[in-house]
Length: 142
Image 1 (cartoon, rainbow, N blue to C red):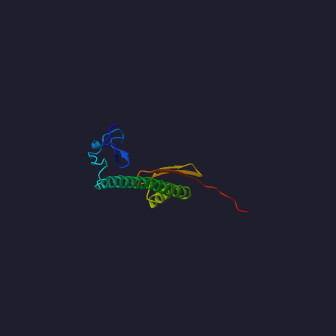
Image 2: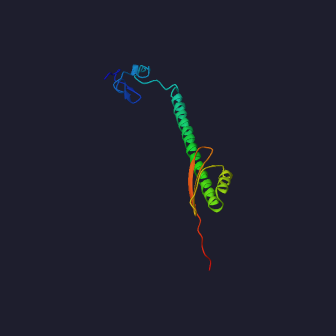
Image 3: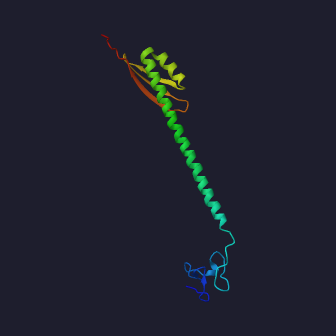
């Protein structure tokens, strides 16, 4: 370790900060009494850089969250359209299922009628596909 007159530099012996001479730490030389000169405020730029990174992180996180939310909402809408189309299809056939899918901003891409059961598949404009089944039940009264 290097010593400079044995004096302290801000509570640290000159040259003892990480085994580096005071004169080579950030290009700042020890004063004649072995003390580091006062800061000239050049560290404010590092705060701005950190705030910039934090701000960028927050923006990226918000964009990712918005994308995930959009996909979840579209999936929910597609499933609602498929459910409604299946119920309409089991009651009134393919045309009713197609009309109900269209009313829910989706397109009927598959319709399978098996007597008392219907399976439909719809796709939204975003490309989300959903499938639903509906079954007709006949109940006797009395």
